[in-house]
Image (cartoon, rainbow, N blue to C red; front, side):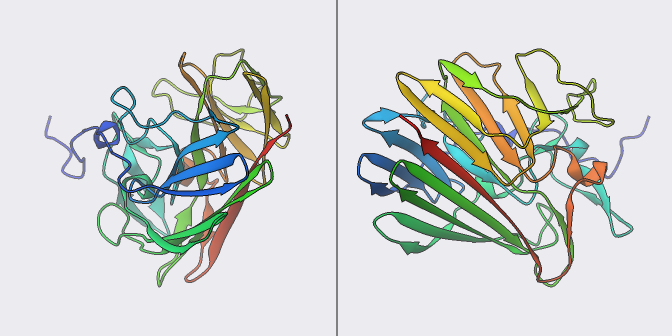
Length: 281
């Protein structure tokens, strides 16, 4: 059988090491956020009263998808085989994990620091206009620290061309002692591990699944408790690893471009979302 000429050969650059580069820090009292703008505009670490909450970069957790908390934009999760159709045209994104395109392009790109103050930072990124993402556009994020709170706001804006979009965050939390979560329906995963429809009742854990969710999530670890809330109504929970749990608010599910669950952004329009972490004790 002849090879599909549109098929980009599988490779896994999402597993390639990505060092933090230069770090900057914002804080409020004993709540400290270390940023790594050059490494996908991500938060490298959140520390409260001296206790780290995120899996930071080290020799064991060096892959670009495996540490910190990074924005997923202009899509979140996997796009099946990197293929989708938009406004009557077929597109093929580069494959970066297994047979699929995962977590957007921003996590692998250096972001510009637009504002740096003692307790907040603003970053921006011009999205590519090549095979990685042919539509262009731009992204802006603001991270601010208040008393016992970290608030993140993420906005993607279309450029001259309309484009599809889903956005979200992928935090790697060090393994909590307990997580209180009450998700709604789940997008069942098929044999390729990709979210599908119709929605179903949640399976028993452990999970690597996308749920509809409109309730806060509580995480408890070593005497501290964090409440996670967001205006995103989708939540991916990945709690299979022994060292970490990922709780990922998203504006739509994985493979949203093919499930008709993505935002359709006309030229120069935008999509925004927020995520709030609050320490209760």
